[in-house]
Image 1 (cartoon, rainbow, N blue to C red):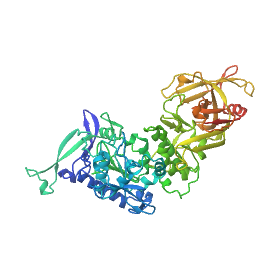
Image 2: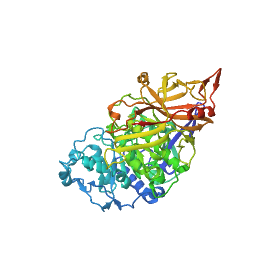
Image 3: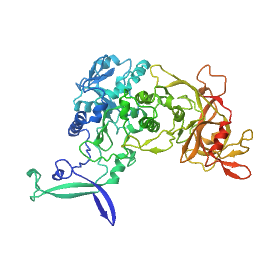
Image 4: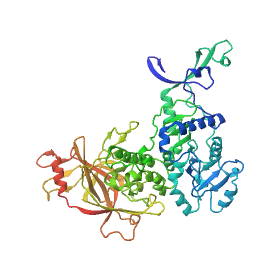
Length: 602
């Protein structure tokens, strides 16, 4: 609805409540604030059943019919709320269960350990459980389901063997659950998520609506049928429901946690308890339970359909295959912006998603990158610089997993793809690879988690080591620098020197680079906007102990990545008798004459 106020058009969303005389004429409903009340959970159950029965897109990615899914190792039996207990399954057992996605936010003294495992299998006293878990049990029961999976109770938290075994099965826990309860509104496990919500945003106006005669029970005292409609400015709805902050408070706590990303994306459907209302999110749509408007603004995309069907072969390099590769990087970018309580979980907390992508992009997964696209996968950088000398090893320096910072992938351009509901980034096309991959090895820390934490990794590129130093010119918050490239070309065909060649995206604090000896390692050419670009890595010697993981690295010098750099012919000045522009042919000629060496990166 558009209303003109003082000559300015304002858009409003109209809604009313169920049972109001206006409900026959206004389809949109107000948000449900009482998310834990029986009527709200009954509506949610109806929405879930509708999804199960009538959503072909969700049916297509559901691996098992309802009741036929293999059960996880342990589950909480909620059939008798007064006698909760932990049950262990055995191979071949099938059934229906719900999983919980939530934020720990604090220690959980009630968690399952080797000491209390046997007693929990007899009975779990509800009085010891935090409110979020009690709320999840209540919702599970209200939906008519008896079995619930919660990590803190269904994994033996002080058994490394059990943790590794269950983490290796995490992909199936959320894929096979009929529903995931997303406790989005709770910042910590003791908070719970069934509290009544405040009405946000508040209506800008409440107006009477004179309705045609209807149900006599709805007739007002003066013999008319008058309903009430609520007007909320549309931009206010977008801002409140979808921005990360509303009135100074986060709108989703699970959306800020690393572990919760794969729990969300692997789930066929989720019942989301947001800070404003109750939503059902599935592979088909996201909508507010009860019929309140949801415009989908800024909804995160689901996983591509193709990866749910690993038997479907996609030709590497095809548009759909490139779209899936780009989707992986969108997920990595989202993931690195989330928080992890333990930074060493950097790889394991996304490993279940890597397993889903592996049949299409793999098979070889290299600490967050893929062997098939390794040269272009090296083109990531940090949103902000980090410490020059990391003290703990999370992965090789050439992997995004080595940094605790937000990362983004340097794409060449955006194009439309086979997925009309989304934007996707085309893979940067290296028209002429300059570097050659001699060898890349990754040793997992645990054989049961091949896509989890890394014990050691090495990448050997055959390329050039070009000395360089940096000149700060108009520094930007994310550390882009213009490089001075003091390379004399007199031994080659072009008797000149080059300067200001490289645009630098630093992984580290640029203030720490002044005394650091650095090299540029060209990786490959690509054309963008008709200009030849050369991308490569900036490296320094790996002198600290944490980079020498293996007992026997090669005897050659070992380097580590400290940034990404790019050069293009439009910003290179050549000094002969006068300033000129470096042509593409000159670039090829120059670089083709540089000596190649094997460069080991750790």
